[in-house]
Length: 580
Ligand code: ADP
Image (cartoon, rainbow, N blue to C red; front, side, top):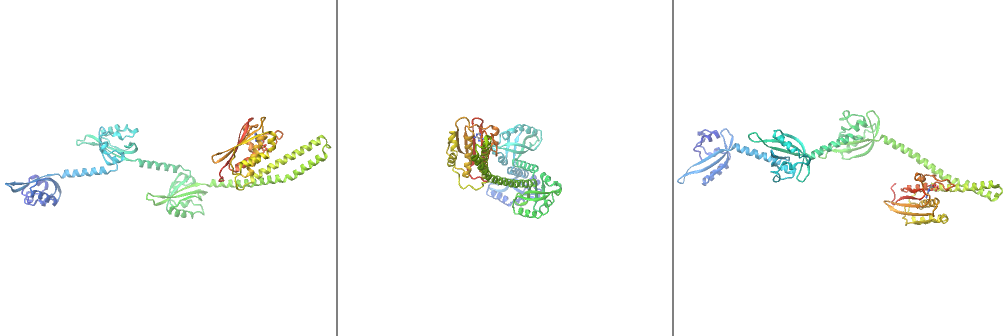
């Protein structure tokens, strides 16, 4: 189609002169041949073209977008020419495209972008806003912005709107907002005034970024940093070449170097002579991803002191999981090591002393028996032969000698018992049957039971992890004492046992003279007695023996008593084999 004319505006638009335009095929001016071909084919088919956007090439090479409307003019059914009107829509098209781009940028933003009028009514709402706050655009547009307020931040809105009205921009304002499902998020806000074409402020645009995770991370990092700094242990990090990267106050205290002095230096500075080789070894283990736990070694402080250190070294990885260095926690165990050595020495000495003492007690109790028997045998012989011839005083002396010998024999027997208890370490093969052992004890104590008319009752008793002779010792001593330290009333003794947690709890109760509270502890000590032999004969060893047995079995023994009304002795024996 050939152009046969155009108005001045058209020439101005395209920059051609009348002669450059008129007489040319219109297709020459079109950038997009399909667009013009489409228009022409419509016209040929007798249809109109309405508002078809077409890019045209100007004389200077610029492209302009025009909106063409055209129709065929006929006279008496005959084609005369085509009338075409074009409007320049270049600017409108550019603006529309820019707006579209902007809208898609806003929509694809992970930040919430929204706008509101000066009353705080929400006018627009992007997908980021939907994601952060949980409301869809439909749910919030037209609502007041305060639906997003965290309960403690409701007062902020009038203030922000006031600043916007004054034309201020509120930048990176950190606050808290509430989501649709009630979660509180930390938000960084930037709010700017929106002006109309005349420059009047009509509303505000708001960009909100959810910084909850960031601020939690920052807080966590801060806290971790503070922990590292306040730690008593030396905490440092090094890269894979062993170059020190960080150094806390604990490290400075321990090794004496300041962070400035040591950061950037190789960690081998700290190795004590003879321990330098360890460092490449540690580094190669770290490179393999291994962790070194409580590795005891020697390091040297700045002032030359050699320290015993317990080291824990762990690989440090970057965000991709690649090992980039090592963190190291060093604890000074120099003092602990010295203390442990001292305790070991003291323990050895104690063990030796104890062994000596046991040996002495054992041999004393055995060796003294022989001469003691001689004393009693000859004293007895003296009495048989010379009784009545020694005068009254002589007879009395002999009686006392004999009584002393008997008492000494009893003491030695108790001492032998005691040494037997404390030296017994053999494994317990089978549990002791408490019921039958109690019966044996009652047989042993038959004379005193009959003599005092004591009533002894008991519950069913469980088997316990003790040697039989040990349990016999306990019952014998506790029941013997209950009879021995009887009060004015007929003797009543009750023995009971029950399970309590992982122990069996035994009790032996009497209605005897009782024990004053201040002696409740001491009576379990060796040779501790509350009475003279004249009042109540005894060795002061019975309860000490009981305590030895119970404690060696992993249990506890104690007394509850009121002076004058009786006593209950309690002891526990673990049900299961103790791991000691
Ligand atoms: P011993 O009976 O040979 O003196 P123990 O070690 O058995 O030695 O007892 C220590 C002391 O505890 C006794 O001297 C006595 O004073 C007191 N005692 C022990 N059992 C009882 C009891 N059932 N009632 C009152 N006092 C007791």
